[in-house]
Length: 363
Length: 241
Ligand SMILES: Nc1ncnc2c1ncn2[C@@H]1O[C@H](COP(=O)(O)OP(=O)(O)OP(=O)(O)O)[C@@H](O)[C@H]1O
Ligand SMILES: [Mg+2]
Image 1 (cartoon, rainbow over the protein chains, first blue to last red):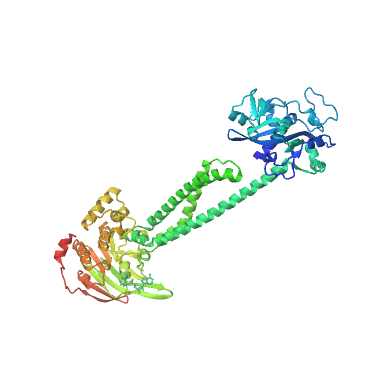
Image 2: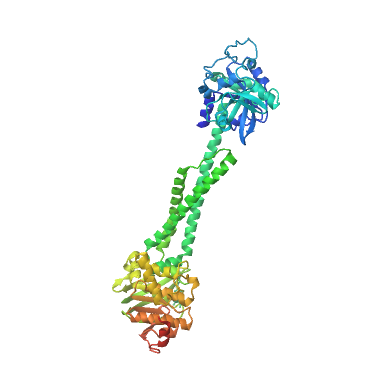
């Protein structure tokens, strides 16, 4: 499943969010309206909790550039990169390994003084006015590495273009957390803290312990988010199946009803045809052919209307882009023809068996 | 040509049994022109349908040219109707969404003719009934008499030996009726056998023989008193049928 795979690639497994945060979507999780104080990072890193492998505080603000929406995310760089295995290809940092107990990670060239808050020591790598730009964003805005780029009124130096991840991160730029906090005028706040927690410790109640430590925040594991999303997806799948069954039944019933009514209305025509020498076979063929045409028409129209509706409604209702699926045209056709033929067979056979005189009785 | 052997037909209607035709035995020779008269409900239409292979009798047998019609499978009976029988109805029974030409094409299509041959023959037939200039009209765009003439052309398409006409002039004014009857007479002269149900004594006068039906039984069966052996000869010429 795609979401699980992506989350695995991110390496993060615990999220600390504002109380009001929804868990519907990991990516909206760090775009909350509400914020939590940056202090929480310090609180965590100076606590005696073991099993916290990495802490990534994040603050995100939406941006609109050249009519497109992007996200500018403030990070404390070292941790961010440790958490994101997907960026290994950038070659700057290696993925965090093992399940250490230390929050304080040794940084290149800087020996951390014991007891110093973690955030101080991990600032250095991404400079105050440096920017990391997501793959799509760079492509669309024509940004190249080493270039100077002005965002929110501040001139940034583009430090690197990030390789493609296939996630919303491609439409994201990363700046230093504290730079963004200053630009956004928000003070020392963040939207989320991503944590790489040690699995063993999580099973021993790490989440509850963090919860006790930060009672004002919401602490969730990624698996909870995944479970929520998987549940939603299952429910949607079942609902779609239910709708499909209902539509097939209703559609079949209305075609059957239509054909019955049609046979009844045209009994005089049928009688005339039979009086002129049309056999039962021909009458059956005429009605089944009509059903076939009805099925083909219904299938083609259904596919195009359905696809158009999905293309239009998908992004608006569910927030997912939808692409037309040509294989569905085949199934729409097959199902529609099958329903039309099945629903028409009995009325058609009834018509074929009519005594010509019955149809012609002058009432 | 046509033979009925103690044929009965009863309908069940709301639990009651109606004897529409009661033990009728009869023979009609090739080339006869027979009129069938009788009060409403006496079983005239039932009689004609039975003869035409369109209504299975409750009892008895119907023979057409030596073949027992109702011992045939439905498909074979349909084929028999197509090849040997022509029907004319009081209410024409044209297909409303087809043009005059297309209506006449229907039996030709059933006979398996190519589209071109169908159109060619249908045009000839419509010319013959004097509707060469109405080929593209739908039934609703034709008068009653014209519709009946389209129906006659259609009935003639497969060159039937036997023509069964159920009140063919029932809905028409006397002059138009005369036209239709003259046409039937000319078909009779071509050697076809004609049975015609009618309420109109003037129409009945065209026939050479008249049957009376009353309560499902043949009550009189004899030679037609020839009132007008050859009525309104001049009208016929005028109508060019
Ligand atoms: N489908 C039917 N179901 C029940 N009864 C029927 C049916 N068709 C005809 N009948 C009955 O059979 C009898 C004969 O009907 P038929 O139509 O043969 O009469 P008809 O002589 O043609 O009458 P008309 O001159 O009015 O056309 C009538 O009493 C009629 O009510
Ligand atoms: Mg009748």
